[in-house]
Structures are given as C-alpha cells and as structure tokens.
Image 1 (cartoon, rainbow, N blue to C red):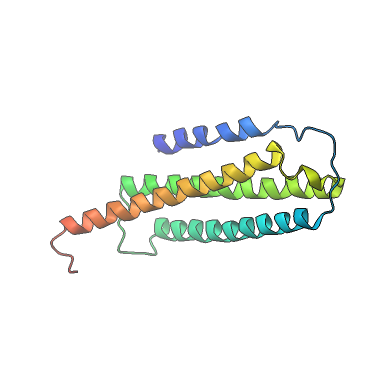
Image 2 (cartoon, rainbow, N blue to C red):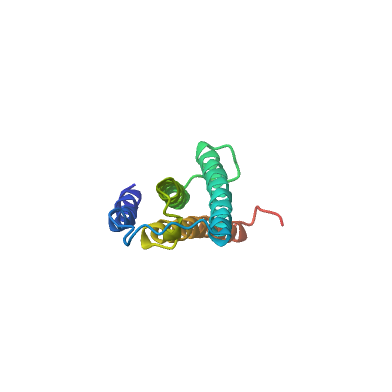
Length: 156
C-alpha cells in the first residue's frame, strides 16, 4: 500500500510541471488542410488510446475483483495491478487534457499553435504513462509465467 501511495505522489509531478505551460506566441490562425489532417490523425490516435486504456483498466479491475480465478492476488500482483491502473488512468487524464487544449485552440481560431509545448507535453506524457502501465502489466504476466514454471502441478 505504501508503494502505491508513493507512486501516486510521484505521478503528480508531470501534472505540476505541465499545468502552467503557456501556449505562447501570438495566435496564429491556420485553416490549412495540412493542419486539419494533422489534428484528425492525432485525434484518432488519442481516441484509440483512450479505448485501449479504458479496456485494460477494466481488465485489471476484473482481476482484482477475482473474476479470473487462476490469478491469486498476492502482494506483488496487487502492487503491479495498482501501478498499472494508476499509470493508465493518468494516460487517460493526459489524453483528455490534450483534447481540451486542442478544442480551446480551435475555438479561439489559433489552430496554427498545434505544435506548441502546451499541447505537445500532455500528448507525450500520455504515451509515456500508457507505456508505463503496459510495462507493469507485462511484469505481471512475466511474474505469473515464472511462478507457473516453478509449479509442478501446472501442465503445459
């Protein structure tokens, strides 16, 4: 439990680093087709990632609830699933934050600022948080595979 609390505290660091990142510069209106295509592609990637993160969090919750009886909830499993849920939830937060920032730019007519640090930071943080969450789930699978390899009762 202490590990999860420390991880929660550390996960707040990027939020404080990026929260006050100014968009900067003068509003650069852009209605070019390339800007619209870039936004559409980035938006599709974020939508896919939101769907994946939400589904994986549901899977983690199902494991914690005991729906998958083959996985015993040990301290290691609890910590790895907790860290994965924390990281994936943070990835969802950054994705939504990015979508709000882009919507703000479009409403203000400043679509030319799509490459500003205020938009790039949450987008990059989203991918890092998602990667970390998937890494913790991979560690869980590896730990369970090693546990089963050492268990003589499990037939392959």
